[in-house]
Length: 254
Length: 254
Image (tube, rainbow over all chains, first blue to last red; front, side, top):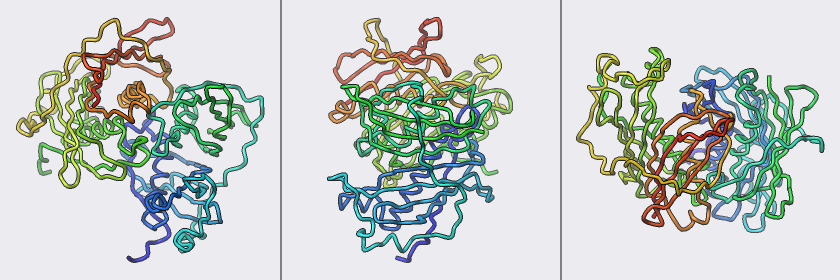
């Protein structure tokens, strides 16, 4: 097999049912396409889930930042490019670039992934996978000009906006609440009237702990320095009503 | 332009994030792919939304029945074939067949669509569209062996299982709650343990009235003759707490 290029490029279409009231792709679905691109890219290069599952390892998404100039509209074809720009023992960072057929750049993404053992749930050595295969695909020169996820400091003053229960369709093949569903729920914290006036500029999400079907998710929100800039904390609670943080996010509008 | 065949055939993949805990495509996403196929098929043939929007008309999904032998698994490529098998003045019926690359038949779908005027919301004459263009594409011989949607009779004994509020990500470009979201919510009426023992065989859904962001949806369920066969009624309520029926469904498991 010829060695594949370091950068993968995958075509998607903004399906009409994946678009919001303004006919633009929902951010959750864009996140979904990025995660698909990451999955295709790593599988094709031999260090993806398809191989990892055979040795009881899995990638876990730890952080995701997306920053957009604009969003594809219904029926627009677009490409998600993705590449790994750094690998350490327990974490890799992977970038995304979203471009149109004509070369228009919609925006970028940056993500951090941990490798874990599916039995112990402990971190696992990335360089032990196929003798450090991932090192052959590190691309440091291709530009991803957005800033990394910051460490979001959310205070106790954040107010509870809502809680929701989780069901069958929230759960992925690992038995966890799907990473993309959190993104949907986060953007549901603002209503249609808000989106008539504002556009999502940047999302940062840090996945802190996994949640499961039946967990109740609580959404807390507080404003940052600007009235377009917000922190969001998601906690889960069990039957004993103990709350544990599952996600911490920042959402910036324009 | 050469005339297109009556039957359209569109390729999809069961994306890993569209699969449930058992690694099979969610029924809601299958419905989504069927609606996409219908949209592509009608647009390509000149009587789709792209043209209708220019003359203030739109297709409205009235009924959908899906009956499956099995579901595509993660990464499976499959095709949705679709064709219009009947057209009357105000309604068309459109069929679906879901097949694998090797010809395995996963299942079928049947749908009924109304044409309406987007201003008056009144039914509109289908044969007035481009001088009855749709008549050139009626395919009556290709087999779709599942039964049509029945008229679901749900009694007042159906019990309220849950209510949910609707938000930004539930709303489509028409400002209505997305048809596919109802399907997700319906299947969320059963929990993971149920799906560990049972598989969805057939869904019938009749869309009775549109709902909008902010409406509260109430889900009522009752068992039919068999303990695997259920009726579901969805109502919406507004600030005055008046409930109006929006969907009526039947769900059969095996």
